[in-house]
Each structure stands twice: as C-alpha cells, then as structure tokens.
Amino acid sequence: MNKDKPPHSESQKVAIELAALLGEKHHGVISQIRRIVQLCGVDFTREMYAATLEIEATGGMLLPDHSRRRTPGGVFFHLVRSKLDEDQKKQVFHGNSQAGIPLLSWTKRIAIIQSLQTGQGKIGSLTVSLRGRPEQVEKRAEVVVIHLLDEPSIVNLPRGIPKPPSTPSVVEVYVALEKWEKVEAAITNSSDRLLVEGICVFNTQTKSMVVFATSVQSCREK
Image 1 (cartoon, rainbow, N blue to C red):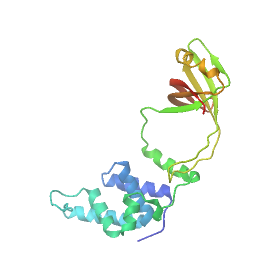
Image 2: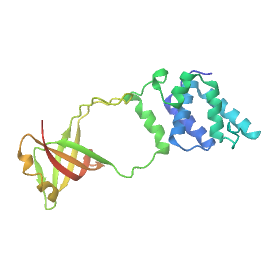
Image 3: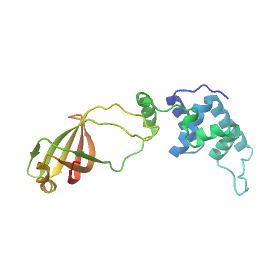
Image 4: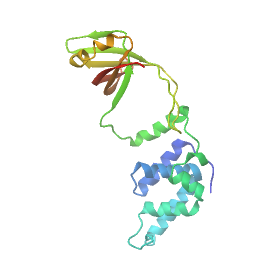
C-alpha cells in the first residue's frame, strides 16, 4: 500500500473522478474516497477501482443477505474495507484525523477551496447576527445606515476547525426607519448595544460586508 500522501488538491481531483465513474454524487462519499487517497495513496485507490470493474464484469457482488447486487460504489468500499485495519477504517469512514490525517491549517485552505469550486453548491439564504454599538448613524427618509468595525476575538472554535487571523473588517448595516425608531431611545444609553439579525451580502465597491436588518433589538451590556 502506497503511503505517500498526495496534496489535498490531487486527492480531491482523484476522488471526484472516481466518484463519477462509480456513479456516486454525494459529497460525503467523495470525502471518503478523498480520505482513502490521502491515507493509502493514488495507486492503491485506483487498484481498488480496477478490482471493482473486474467484479462488475463477472456479475457483480451480492449483499450478505443475497437480496440484491451491491452498487459499484458498494463493491469499491467493500474492497477497501477488506484491506484496512480498524484504525485506518476509522480514519476513512468516520473522518478521524487524529490517527494520521493532518489537521487543516488556515494557510492551506486555499487549495481546498479551489478544488471544491468545480462542484460548489448554492446558498438559498445567508443570515448573520451581530452585537455592537454605533458611534453615529445616518438617517434617510426610510432607512438608517450604520457603519461598524469588526475586530474579532476568535476563541473556542470546535476542535479541528482552522483558526483564522483576527483581521478587522467593516460592516455596513441598513435598518428600516420603523425598526430603528423602536430602539433609538434605548441606544442613547452608553451601556446599551444593538442586537441585529439580517441578510448578509458582500459590497464589492467598499470591500465590506453589508447586513440588511430583519430584526433589531437593544440589550444592556453586562
């Protein structure tokens, strides 16, 4: 078994290719194949695929209860399982990175994002929540505009999540006047903060995030 670990971008490319050949489209399956490539090497993974084709050409492989044939993907994973020890199975089929697959670092994420762009999904809606206090606001006939600076203190991330740098970013908030009037009096107190939930987009002109408020409340800072 070849233990030379290919780059993530190559592993992802091979995984997408073999998943398509096996008729598998689910992202979780592609991730499992990618972990096989990373753990066992490209040559091993392609050997398992070649063995799958041989079995399919001679009538396939039945399930243990003989109720039906395994799918090509099922044959492939059955063959892989037969070659792995228990620790390797945990790494491949349960995503256990502690036993040999390196954790993702923030600086190495670019290659992953680039590889995922070939099959990226679509967001139906994107909402965010924020808490802060504006120094000044700009009122118009029907909307209030707020400009906030986010200087994140990134702590207590779930295990395995790469920690990004604490880079300041600008957030524009647009609040309907009728919603703003409900919190305007309270926010004059220096210990009060705004709680804003809304739809988030990126402003290419100002290079900042924009939040269109759907809910605005005030809260007292403890």
